[in-house]
Length: 200
Image (cartoon, rainbow, N blue to C red; front, side, top):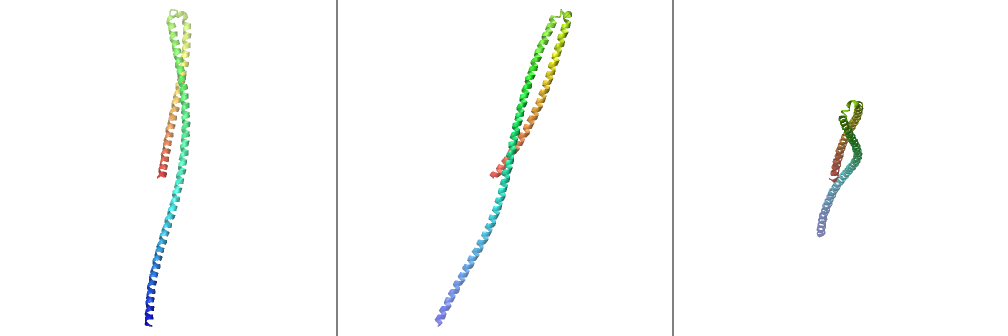
């Protein structure tokens, strides 16, 4: 009987030790599980934060693309304006060439009239001996020459005024072109900054 009691006590002690080991093992696993849950919660929070950051970056990217499209439209409009100004400038140069041709024609007419004037003075010198007889004819010739000179001077004055107006228009066109180039350069710099941000 005593041996049975000792065996029972021994078995109970053995079972009690195994039970403590089992409880410790369960507690250790529960602690690991709780730690894993905390890590999972942290990971979920990080994923949520990353997802929100991703949405913000996507919105910024869409905004950047929209700004890039607007800048591209402005640049296309600037190039269109540049083409229009170039056409106006070419038209201005064409008008300037026409005025130059008119001016050359006026100078040619002036030279012809000058030659006529010299010829008239030569005839006047040759007809000095017939001065009294031919005075009336000479006065008429002089009057006609003065009339021609007045017309020529009027043409020259008109041509100069046209040339001055053309110069003013050309200067205005050059100023417009300079402003357009400045705007185009500014748009290009803005586009480069956006591309740099996108590439970064």
